[in-house]
Length: 529
Image 1 (spheres, helix red, strand yellow):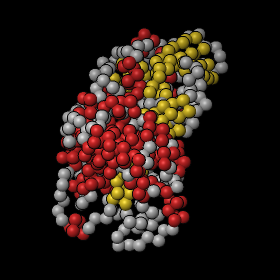
Image 2 (tube, one colour):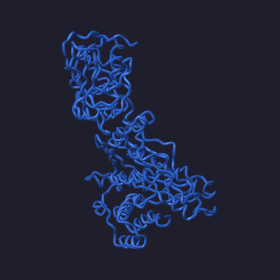
Image 3 (tube, one colour):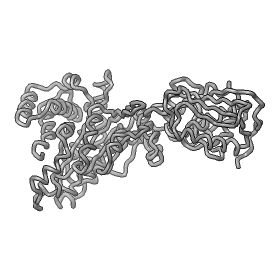
Image 4 (cartoon, helix red, strand yellow):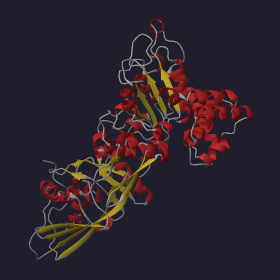
């Protein structure tokens, strides 16, 4: 049992009392303001009615609120209670309305004054004993409160580290409803405040390093190009050659998350229940970029997002990071096809009968696959027994439009014993990351007047403007298009990759060698498929 509250415990005798508490609900990854109106009508039979398009989780707040108020020592009104969540045309979901509803009842009973709470945003889930449980979307709600210029926000203490980046705003965290009441009645000067280590201080650290990989220098080079320009990459090679190891280490050479990227990434994870605990503070304090590797049995909804109350899928959970699809040809074709929109538009739109929700999905797609069902098609030491029919069925799941959206196609061959036995050579992740960071800085300087941050995001018009080729480069690309049959989309992507290679070499103008390397990293589909 909690300490008894230091305020009056009985509700005043009233005929009718209306109170209003500011709260919020989620729409996609953003929060929208909701006014919780609580009306207590004396002289009627006890009842409770919640209106304003509440979902089951909101309607169930009745039992939580009643038990919490009673167990904290406050009297509960045995009159007709009407809760209205305005505006009434927006569907309300989640448990964040528990605390504002309870506070509204206490305001109606004149335990807390309306004047004290009218300028605050209040969110929180109540336990039966009155303690506050963490909610989804605390960061989005705090951002909205700051934008709407509320005096401050009251939320569960367990959500404070999630909103640490906004610590300059008036954020108050409470352990239970008694603390909230004492704060608004003047018995507490402040509640818990956000604390933690500044995200600008500790550099990202990873247990993986590219120096762990023996050989595969051309693949490491391709990974560095992909990281520098934000390009999608497809690896094809025999099992055990190192495809997964190469992909898993890509985040180690990507630049740390910026402040804005950290906010965007944390907002997505804060509204996704299955990842909130697993990834708590992972991006907020470490600045690590997300790395998502869904299994090939994933569904369309799991990859793109959806459900009746739309939630982000893997493409959004990989926002500002890497989405790795291992064994690409084992995914269902209809699942792979949902990648086409987010790969092109860097967002995914989920349309339902009630509303349409758009989630950000700007990621680097890295995919790996075997050259055939058995994996021995190009092995110099093992014989492949796959028939033409087997190959046709295997590659049928990967459509040409999807394949066309990969900027880099990299063959991965088995590593010889000599390379496996020798000490690691070449650059490590730190050295590669420094080169990537320098290339990204060049791109940011070039793109400072645009909404884009890397070469892979350039639309066709800006691609031709910012990626001019010398005459010999144009002639080389023209011959490649005629002989290999590249599409118009492939043409633009070759230009962007050429621009990235030049940025890596700290060269302002693209030359013939840059174009030749970009073409060499593009023609694998014409050989394998």
